[in-house]
Amino acid sequence: MTVKTNVLIIFAFIALFNGCMKCQNYTFNHEIIYIKNYDDTVRFKNVKLLETIKISSVEFDDTPVLEAIDWLAYSGQQTISYLDFNTHSDFSSTTNKTITLIMKNTTFLTVLDEICGQSERSWGFNENILMTLPDHYIRDNNDWVSKKNHECVEDHRTNHIKIINK
Image (cartoon, rainbow, N blue to C red; front, top):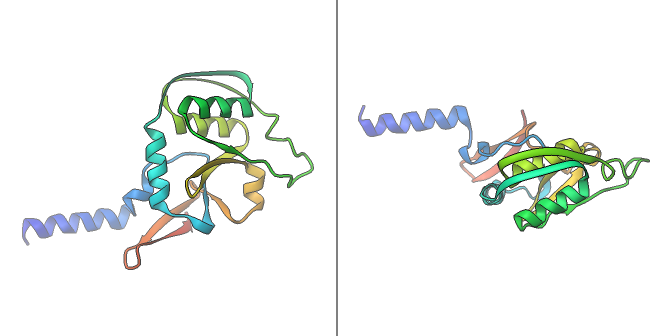
C-alpha cells in the first residue's frame, strides 16, 4: 500500500466512526432542530458565526428571562425571536422565569444556552432566524427535536442530511 492509500483509509475510518465532522462541531445542551427545513450547512454557518461573538462579561441576578435575552441580543448585535405558545394552562410558565448568571470571556451561544437552561427554554434556527421556544412546546410539537438527543447523518450519495435518534 502506498502512503496515499493509507491516508485515505485512515480518513474513511475516522468518517465511518465519527460521522459527519460538520454535524459534530458545536454541541449545546439546549439546541433544537426544526425538522421541516433542517439544513446542517446553514446551521453550521449560523453557529460558527455566532460563536465568534465574544461576551467579555455577563451578570444577571434574578433577571427576567425576556430582559436577559434582550440584553444578549443587544450585546451581540443579533436578533433573537422569543416565542411562547399557549399549549398548557399556565401560559406564562417560562416568561416569568428569572436568570441568575455570572460568566466571563464566553461566547454568545454559550450565554444563550445557559439562559435557556435556567428558563425551561430551548433555542434553534428556522433557516437563518435564531429563536427560543418553551420546552413544553418542543415536547408537544413533532416539528422540533432536541439536537443533543439526535444526530445528523450525511448520505454521501445524495448529499442530504438525515436526522436520527441517538
